[in-house]
Image 1: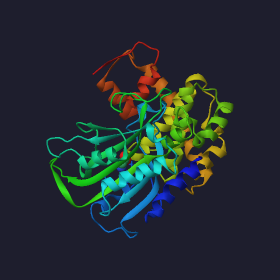
Image 2 (image 1 turned 180 degrees about the vertical axis):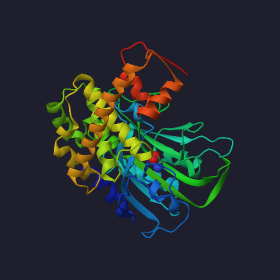
Image 3 (image 1 turned 90 degrees about the vertical axis):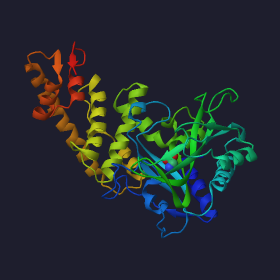
Image 4 (image 1 turned 90 degrees about the horizontal axis):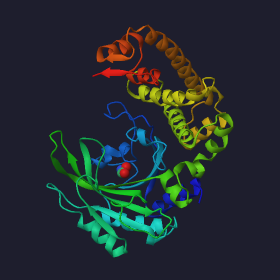
Length: 396
Ligand code: GLY
């Protein structure tokens, strides 16, 4: 099943169950929102989950572009991406969590064709404030899916330190070559596929929980990870979504597998962020974009300083904007990428000069780092990068 068939199978299933399809919101949340980027399918729906009526009704489905920088260090492994799409379904004070799980099971094992014998579920096991999620546990047992109760935050979902939150039930699928063994908590060949959250509470500033007037259900399933499973691939980078990257980049730059993955991921994320109107800067969203692009350039220039993101084939920019439903001009994206490359190149030249003039570059203090950042625009991570290969001590 290719990417478009997969999306269609998901959204059609929920439309057949009276859900209205909503368009993807921007990666940039509206003014006043405390987060830098949209990190989940439910984020744009926060106020409706808090009780405001949604103009399209109480049952919704959709595909939302999301960006997470919390997983940045894991990029390059088989399943983490900086920018990705999340398939979702929502009950805004309508049906309950067990109904959502039953539909989830029907869709996975029916239309999406996942072998039911390869599923495992986890459920909130309770803590000092909230009891165990026995409704979900009972539903999985009735459906014949093995279920594991977890402790702590493992099966608790919130969109931030305050706001709507609640217990979740996560559906895992077995990706090992041998028959399934262990459980999601003991064997990482169980890959998390779909999260069903029962939004029952609102967390206040003091950490306490109050019940929401109308409990809702929020589900989210990463599209790329689902494709990895459905297409029987080792990693998200081997699904059809990354086919153009896999076919174009090796002809341009010779990169090892991990560098190829990080480069594809960060450039794709950079294009999508620019596609939603963000420009590189030294703070906030623009700084996230800057760091992603500079990380790519550092990797590319490690082996060959003549490499240029200006050579990036147009088809990759078009494919990315298209994937995320963005109408931004390719020329604009190319201009932003090129501008940031030029600024970074100049900064490196200046940085090497400044560091060469330091009395003892081998021994830097916090004050040196602050001086280099504030006076010369050299952030600490760049200083460390420029001094790679030299004996350096940073006194903190
Ligand atoms: N909103 C559920 C999730 O992102 O996993």
